[in-house]
Image (cartoon, rainbow, N blue to C red; front, side, top):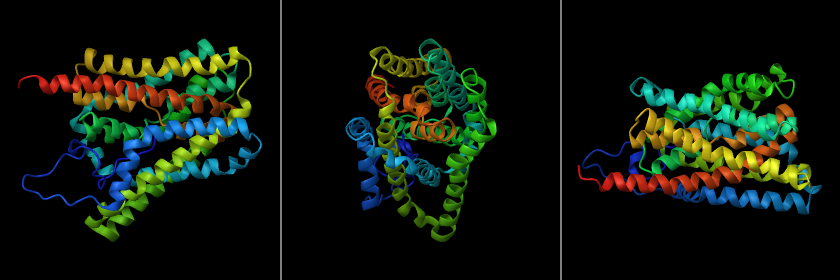
Length: 356
């Protein structure tokens, strides 16, 4: 759920960055690159571990973990800043070369996922308005930065995944409040000014400073920038993991003891992510006939949401109650990403085994 796109990160397959020219000698990975690659490789397991630890600490020390509340917004800002430093915004010029795939990815992100979240909230969470708002908000946020990692592992179209990550992040400044006002306004009164202020605090301002930081580093370091960029993804990753842990731990006091209400919290994410991944695949591959590499990029750029960012905005705009269903969804998103990875991996292997 954190961003790992980084020019200096050589711990992923060559398909990520477009490869090397023939005869070019590649430098051995630095310690920073090895560390970033290690975090990237085990990130899903680390997130799942933080989910379990957050739940355990929330139950065992419910009063003590409330001291983590002041860390929420700074952690979200730090995560977004570090992530935006690694995004190559000059790659947005590639938009004109892949209009169809990018359009599909954006429509799935900002239409299909919010619609699914709205329908599932209507079906299961209408009796708990704050839960419904948080769940709908989760569908409105940008895709997770891990879309690049999963796409790279599947030998997919990594430049496309990078473009979708950057575009959804930039467009999110406008689309998050618009979608939330349209769909979540059914359940609570959405104060657009307060929400825009929250998004400016946790998304727009850190994003701006990330772009500025990148620009200043490029001026100062030039080509040597690639040596230092691997330091930023782990910062974003660890911020996201601490945020995930803290949100779960803080919100465990809000988890109901009634089995029927617990079931209401679990059912929406249990259904959402298979529908999101499966629906994105069917639309991309079967309906629009995108190539497999582009399909993999679009599916992981649509089916995975930036849950730490969603939790931060929910916490700032609507309170901890709205962040609870998002925190619960973290485990389901990770499990589904891994499950669909196995399915897509077999598709890639079959495609590679076919004679040219």
